[in-house]
Length: 521
Image 1: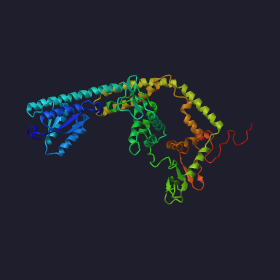
Image 2: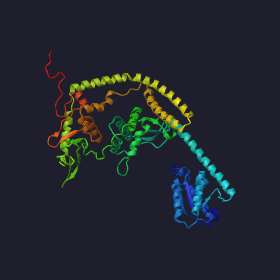
Image 3: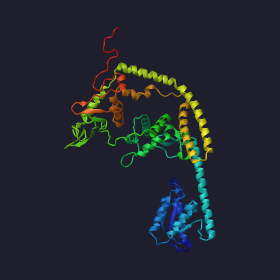
Image 4: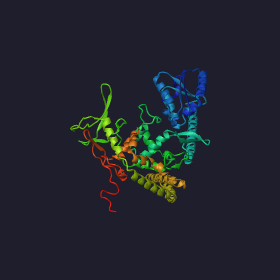
């Protein structure tokens, strides 16, 4: 590297200005005033300012992570035969890291450029380099101290239950009692709640189904193709924030009770995590759409393979058909009109209507069982308090052992134990926090389930594809077979409908409670 003092005196100058964040730039902190002072300096030195490169990112000390600086170096590379003075408002704008300070200085010298600062004179003498090193170290120290202060303040906020990052989908920031706090952002919050609860109970069998469900709402942000990224759905399912908990993984495994309103219970969130980390489910078919809800659920009666479906374009209109696509099958490519196969399926569903007397009796029994569950809630809360105390004692013990551990493998083991104990403590806190809280009214909790048993066709008639798929999974878990000539083959009526006296798929009604033979008394 040639010393900058041996380079020809520059006649042109490039100004570099920097603030550490986009927010500072939007608030007008510095860029314009920096440029103004640098232009005044260039005029006094007789330089012609050829370009100005601003930056609104710190780069974490690395100048190659600043877009403006990268553009400046690229500009110099495009003019290798010209010599420029690179003017900075302050040495801290140059670099606030010892290593990158001298790395940037070398990068400029290699391109024949000379850095000049309004309040510091670069000098290539040993004494000048010593002073420059001291100033660079001072800037590095200030940067590290600021970083430490910010982390300490952010950690204190998190430990107090305050979320301090960009709001997650379904939340927004609002002023609550004079403090900036997360609040549910409707209608997105309801979409997120439905996705989490649906995945927890198995309504959505895969992350792909959650993603597709989110795409059906106009309020959910999508990409240029109108799709939700699969990682967006995955990260949404993992976030403890929706259960009212705050955690920053890089600062530790501990979960803190948030001050914001949760969208789901901790128990629901934990069921989601169990499913995410448990058995892998096959991804949802990409060809499922609302036009053909039976695709993938109805099989050919001859070969047993699932029927496919598509729109066929005619001379004046398009027509929808289902057909078997298995080569060698006698029914291969024999089209079945959409309205015929789906109409007969709706007739099957309409036949699954429970007998009124048995249905009301079963509903009353469920309501009684629910009341028993409500009465036992207080005893479960007391047990949760005892378990919570035991878990907190374990946390103290594991934390003490972690502080004493020296082996990396042992440390990782204790950290995993702490994370599991924190998850368990968060769930127990929720169960024991409000002694008088009820787990819900029977009518509210089981409204959808009762409506489904009373009339599954009503749920099917919804426009939502995921509801149609839910009906298929619950009513005909083993699938159906269809013959173009005779229609649907006999399917076994699910146990839940037989218990309530619903008719079978072929219209055979349940026997009355008295039996076939006449009563003897």
